[in-house]
Picture 1: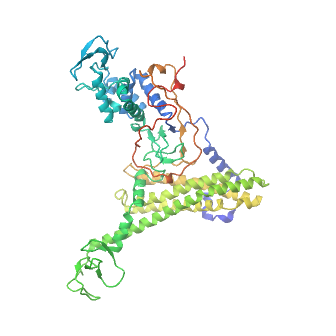
Picture 2: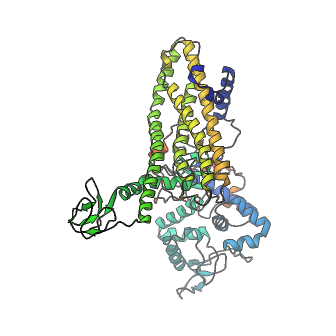
Picture 3: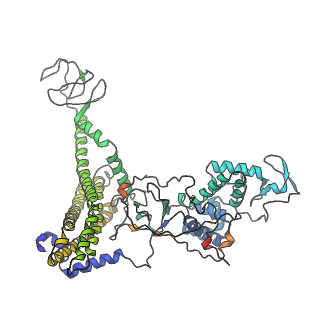
Length: 597
């Protein structure tokens, strides 16, 4: 066993088999946390979206004794942060809470919103006399005919104002009752009523800082809720792993800004332009780039224009190897020479980091095929009469390889911006930058060395080895798995404390390192008390949505396969919350949460 490691590397490994086994046991315990530990992230499916929204609405309605549309308006204003809403209520009181959100709750409440048919009333909008049963009065006391209300609601919904439809009286900021809006609009425009309900439902995601759509393509229909840490990486039940902050693929140890800049740099032609700047010069006539492939300093463009390669100035065609007739450019131009040297230096630096980033990304894709090979080797080994019966150390080592390879790949993108001048030019002196660069690269090289060794041992044909050799390979893989995990932790600590932690600008934060990998979001289950919840049912008792609990997918899909947007919220197609069995567009409680008594 000692033949595989040098004296300098022994510190990274456990010195005995028992310590190695302890290390892998600890790792396995992290991979299977106790069920009592609550997940920080939850998957909200199409079926559970209504229940998730309803849970927050009921909490606010119970505490403040207000109607549903008032509770929704407050929650939208405070971005569905119930704890923040309660804190404002405790600190500043109910009046300040309502005024800050633009909610007007009148002391004089009107019991009936409609009137008797025999009563003739005049509408102040259309100036017509209509029967009383065609008039509707809002909580604020303003009363108009149903046709005028319907037209007002239709315009507001078409303009995207469904979440905060205000009374149409002059300077009245009262929010219209959702049930009245739904009843009036559905009589003439059922499709618009569905759109209204969908806007209300989706406001829980669109206006909620703690909930975001999964950026999968095609869209899986799920959303993710992060309870505590908004700076995290999460795996949706569809298998996609992504950054909750920017909705791009999981990219730690890069910050979101670093990753966005790196993606753009790799995607566009910025480095091609750099190469053109270094190796070509523009024709003074047609302004096309011209490359000099030999000969003297007189260059002829394909348009026929001759110019001097040294200064780029237009010249005639008469020349010798020493001079050009009628032209002299012997004066040194400092700015242009510095610009060319800088462009070449930047290109070489980018090529260095991108080459290593791409190498580890390609290795990760190739090693992904190793999983099937490993499973075949394990199956063959289990059929053999070996002393060792448990081969979980192989799959654990493979999982560790995938995680560390991803970290290692993105660490080069991080280093490109951390030690360059694009983001932190004024944050560090050249001496500090060089010192931190050496510190980081030492840890990066240690991690890279151990990752390559782990990959090498996992590719060994252990299914053909004898008992003794299998045991030796087992100890090597366990040792390397623990060592790689330790080195990843140390790299993240170095980044968080020594590199990013010392900067004055706090905009560059990274998702914390997790030994067990990116957290898989748990399924959301509503936790409200169903007793008494039916009293909050909307006036319109339409079809009740049914909350189901689908099984969580076990497959995992690489985030490299998904091109994700950097926008925070994802537009939804109309009708995306409809299924073949039931509709989720009304706001009734789900049937399985209604007390049958």
